[in-house]
Length: 215
Image (cartoon, rainbow, N blue to C red):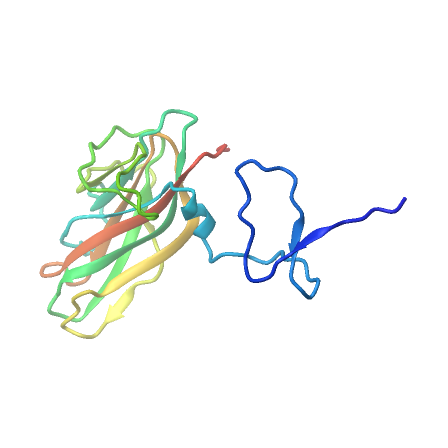
């Protein structure tokens, strides 16, 4: 039996198909090559769905050792059981007041085990796709006291800066979804610096809120 497969030749414009439209031809270029490569920059499609956010914490004095219970910035997932999970995309911390000395700057994170009480967030959450208001159930808060049941995980490498003027020195780590906050969970950051007495750090997080079946 002969079968005929047809495709749509893509010229200078892409398709704009209706929501839920089931039957579509595959696309190929004018050379006859099937278009199966990544069509948009990484994360564009995820952000387009409208549930991608970021939050910038308040200025805090970094610590010189990994703490036990004192977090600098935390994100709480307020979803009910079976609700959306928060996928951590990237985290970072930036020097907003110079340490006035050569420094090492790093950041650690902690994902608490099990459910955590709502820390009553007071830090604004902003959309990555320009939405006016945050539509999720998460809370962000600075200076949260956390339990140490999952310990602190160093995130990425330390940045070493020999300059004594180090305003806006930034450590930024792409986590690519390695950390998932389940409903009721809490993820926290802490900034570390060897010149903690005079420096001020501002931590931040970037995440996506998606429906997942968790194992």
